[in-house]
Length: 165
Image (cartoon, rainbow, N blue to C red):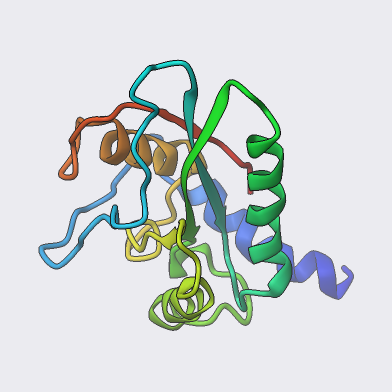
């Protein structure tokens, strides 16, 4: 087996072991960041968009940040869309990718990378989980937090764009 296959075998095994339902927890010190979110167009003529990028980010690179900027350019060039914000969601340590830096350090790297952005944030919920969370469950978390059924549940309502791992 080649070394690249071995590296990915650990991550594939973590995905295979994942529960069929989310085991996600909300820890007492968890806060969902909303300070950089824009408000939806008051006239309702534009569809609000929140970008979510799930991944290991071990380490975060300029290209990860550039990905958000490219998506922002597209949204800004699309008349019926309004960018409200963006989130990095680093994977849990349970993903078992060889060389995966502990979640606290990956979150800190991402926060440092986003510090000068007025619209990109980091959400630590996925990274803090004891078990690997499937992307669909992570997006369910964002839907609850952003659209009102979770702890941060306040108006306005908008769409969560999904990116596969």
